[in-house]
Length: 81
Image (cartoon, rainbow, N blue to C red):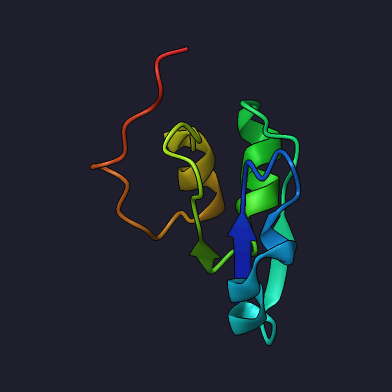
């Protein structure tokens, strides 16, 4: 399973005691967040589980739709920036 954790600015995810619980999975941790739709879609493309650590992490609907076209995104809201 491929997991993605965006917005780990300080790189703490892998140092948490609970990190060993997801050690068997392929983990992608982003320290530099982007609001560029094409780049975000590319980063999300292989992601099966998106784990948000911060309530302020914007995941753009356009990027999610491009990454997961078969998913229902009608309930997603874009952050006002």
